[in-house]
Length: 398
Image (tube, rainbow, N blue to C red; front, side):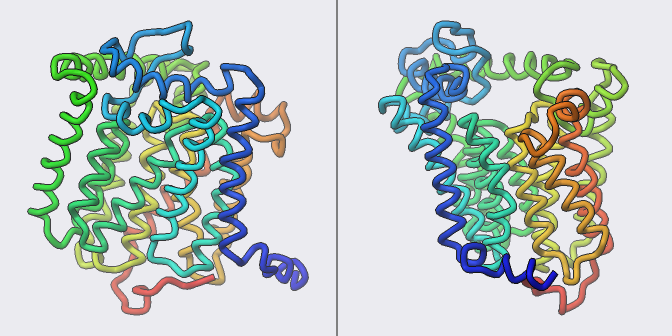
């Protein structure tokens, strides 16, 4: 055991520059690998993303099918046309690579801004590296969305409500998930300014895409977006969908009942999610805030019927933060839950898990969600029983 521990104390594991280099290499390497296959299926998401920009400037539907350009539908809001524009105008090989690098850099930056010690930041990056690979192989927006949620908390904590509001509204106008940043509203020291900033940025992001199209087109596009999301929600509940890797998705698949409603699960989840907010006296405690951040990151994914395997970068970084802020020595419960999540959530899409188990149990029953569900319950319990003591205002470090 001492030898094993000493191995992980080598500079390669303890210096931030090494793990950051690995993240950047993952971003570049996976992007180049997917592009060189010359198989459009491997970069279909990027094809969807870049065409959000081109369809917007050409004023054609963002949510129709375009089989000559990509399969599936776009599910992002009109503001995404502005976000993706700097990449869309570049040659694909360069745009793809820079898009992946941008995702990596933004998320690394967000994690680095957490109120944690350097060794804890490094450990979070190591824990999240494989899940980042899973999502970036699909050119997903999820790393940026994870960063938006984390930075929403960080900026509110740092009394930068105006910029926190900007990120929350950007995330909401792109993919709706960003709205969960409002969970940190009660940490704001200037709630009136925060609310005003939300309205300001809401107007900005509503109007901004009109600058490259037209007001009439964008107004109609928001209607189409809503209609597309309604259809997508019903499609996700299919027992053979690669989405709905969620709390309710597990029950739908285990019970073989695609008609099982989301509503009772969402009501149950929202009640539990809201209970810690009754502990107003704990709002200023850093560990309480970080536990709530973990809750938000995990909740966002496990209670969404749109969650798929690459979405779990959001939830799994919640798991990573939860793990590093636990007091040492870590309890058996914490270690078991973490190892369970590492194996079943993070490594289940890889060859670490036998193909037989992956194809016959993990995917059909959406079991990738299970460890995150259990850890979320643990986080809620820790928040509910959290005690107001001065010692807990500091985080126990690695």
